[in-house]
Image (cartoon, rainbow, N blue to C red; front, side, top):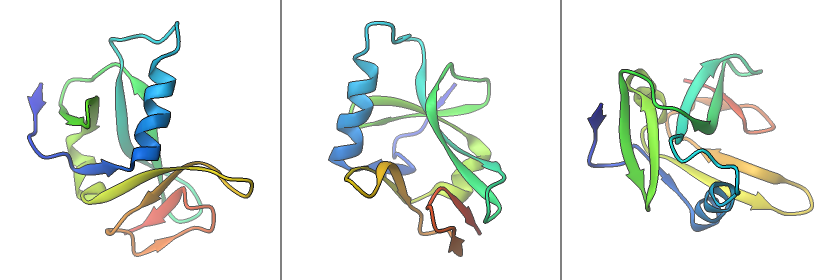
Amino acid sequence: METINVAPVTFTEGALNEIRRLMSADDFDTQKKLRVGVKGGGCSGMTYLLGFELPKEGDDHFMANGVACVMDKTHELYLLGMEIDWQDGLNSRGFTFKNPNASKTCGCGTSFAV
């Protein structure tokens, strides 16, 4: 397990509030950490991952305002400097991603290309 001192991504207060709400569920597994990552797919080539999982060997570990996070070391290249927000409006609801490394983003904002 490697812990990095500076979080590669940031979360807005709205995103942190929603993450903490999810973590406060009675059946939340406290062994799981918030995984931030990417996978191939989506209309622009890569899709964002954000969910609770058990850490894997080779993950980087970091704290984001008191939330324990993990990220595959190879994903930092694509996500460094990204801001994650939570939208709770009538037209959009969910996590949004502002990624300075993305050369293009799809209309829904959940996939990107570098």
